[in-house]
Amino acid sequence: MTGAARAGAAGGRSPVAGTNRDRLVATVVVGRIAPVRLLGDPYVVTADGTPMVAVGAGGITPTVRVGMPAGGWAAEQVEPAVSLAHQDPDANRALCLYACVGNRVEVQDGDVDGAIGVVTGKHEQFQAFSHVLVDFPAAVLEGMGPGARFVVRAIGCGLAAAGAPSVVCHSLAPDLWEAWAPTVDDHRLLVRVAATCPPELVGMGAGRLGATTSLAIQTADRAALDAHQLTRVRLGDLVAIRDWDARFAMGHRPGALTVGVVATGTSRVLGQGMAVTVLLSCADGHLRTTKDRGANIAELLGIGVDAP
Amino acid sequence: MRCFAEVMHPQHRGQLGVDWRDRPVALPGMAGVCRNLRLGSPAFGWAVDHGEPGASVGSPDPLQHLAVQVLACVGNRVRVTGGRARGATGSVIGTHAFVLCDFAQEVLEQMAPGDAVVVEAEGQGLRLLDHPAVVLRNCSPSALDTLPTRSGAGRLEVGVRGVVPPQLMGAGLGMSSEWANCDVMLQDPAVRSAHGLQDLCIGDLVAMPDQDHRFGRGYRRGHVAVGVVVHALGPVPGHGIGVVTLLTGGSDHLGWWLTDRARIADAPALAAP
Image (cartoon, rainbow over all chains, first blue to last red; front, side, top):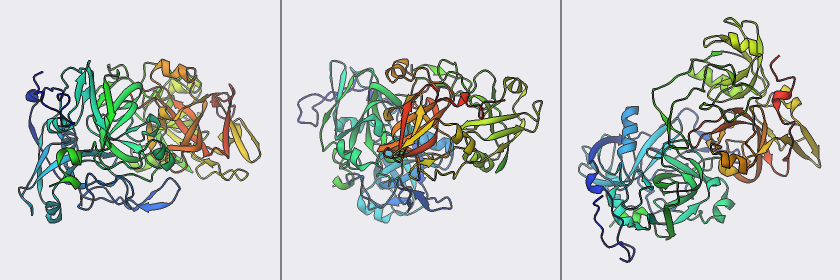
């Protein structure tokens, strides 16, 4: 474990926790724009039993970016900016495992050849799709069309924190780690989060593998969201989920804690909600959080609404 | 509606799951015929993954399979039309990845994957005229007649053997309540005991407060769902025992009381002959 310890972004008070980043394998995986798909009937049924057209998944969505509110869109789990997938299901599973939040993505071919983006999350819809979500500068998004190949410089699988061995990292690029600047004290990893979700609000995603996918923070019960200050959550917010273990298959476990990034917008469908891509999970109390309303990957990585 | 189906063969991809104690596991449980895990059996304690009781039926054709999975309701009659047990009848006791059917012990001893069956599907669309705000799902008219119920002041109450808190609801949230079931994450014996759920059996009725299962399944304060335990525990986190929704509505209209009588295994109309 040789990770560089340097001054943290949060005021330079504590050094950033070291990692094994110099022992990670840097790989390259490829995706293409995930086509917007419709299975016949355009309607989904909301919690109140009313039909709505489920806009939001796949394709390019230039007007929705990390840093913007997760709620309020006339959409279902809207995916910000660019949605990637690989057409071969097994290769797509690998893309969704290897790609980490904070990884660089290079466009090859097409109208914006050479543009550079950043992975912002992963989103799975049951029996429908698994997407890797990527942000690009606004001008790139405007000019982007079909046909491009997206080369993901993937690094992050296997990331581990020096001094906090019971904390498991998923989908977490070393670049995001450095910007987020977790610290370690007494074998406990301390990270900043914008909000904390109670376990009863976790919806679809239970039983999935924490390393490759997303879980939903349910958003059909507005009063419950209000009670936990989850109504103002933004795309890209780093959020904690109490009593939730996402080290392997994801499930409820008293005393466990999971931290992830809000990858998509909210949902009006029962049991669905804003998709959270898991970044950290710990079953034994060695992962702690401090509240910071500004804990958002747009700000940390200078992307989305915070792009230069 | 008469649906044709067959006993489905178990399938495996050679992959291990990781159970709630972080151990790799490969266990039987789904599809095929389970001869000793049946309606009335304990839901916990088996070396099993999503232990489907009795015979698991479905169709090799995906759309036919989906149809019988959605249309079959708890309490429907099932007739064996092929194989050694041809002519025997049993009952639908729930749905999961397959339609779960209980038969008499001697029938189960004769059954095998590939046996043809006919499911007399009836129940989706059933309504309570005296309690229009209570919505029925997956409940046949014969099952409805056997449920322990009482009503007063416009509120329907159902007898249950346990109450599942919302933080234990797992895989199945976000999906249609007519399809499959919702897992309750009860791997940890300490969690089971803390909520008095350690003695649950296949066929027991449970209440799920703060759950709205009318159009999908999800968390909603002021709502409640009542369902029946249909499969034994899956040991992987996020999974658990399966509960099929039977009734759901606002807590002003639907409630429960705890009783040991809340077992469909004891209902003569549903128990295998």
